[in-house]
Amino acid sequence: MPEYGSLFVCLMGMGTVFFGLICLIVLTTVMGKVVGGRPAPAVSAPVPAAAVSAVPEGNRQEIAAAVSAAIAEELGTSITGIRIVSMKKL
Image (cartoon, rainbow, N blue to C red; front, side, top):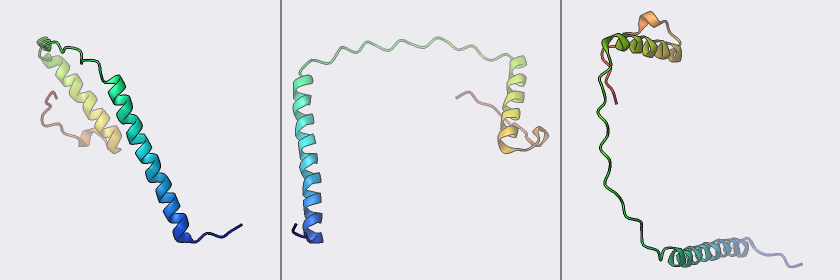
C-alpha cells in the first residue's frame, strides 16, 4: 500500500469538504426553485392589542415582595438587604 504525504492527505480532505459544500449549495438552490414557486400567502393587518388595566396598589406590594424574595434567593442574601426603588412593566 502506498504511503501518502501529509500535503496530499490535506488537499484531498479539503477538496472533499468543498465538493460536499458545493453539492449542498446546488441541492438547496434546486429545492428552492422547486418548492419556492408558490406565491406567499397574504399577510393580514395586525390586530390591535387589548387595553391593559393598571395593577391595583394592593397587588403592587405583593408583587414587590415576591420580586424581593426571588432576588434575595438568587443572590443568597437576606431579604432585608434588598431595596426596590421602582418597578416598571416591560
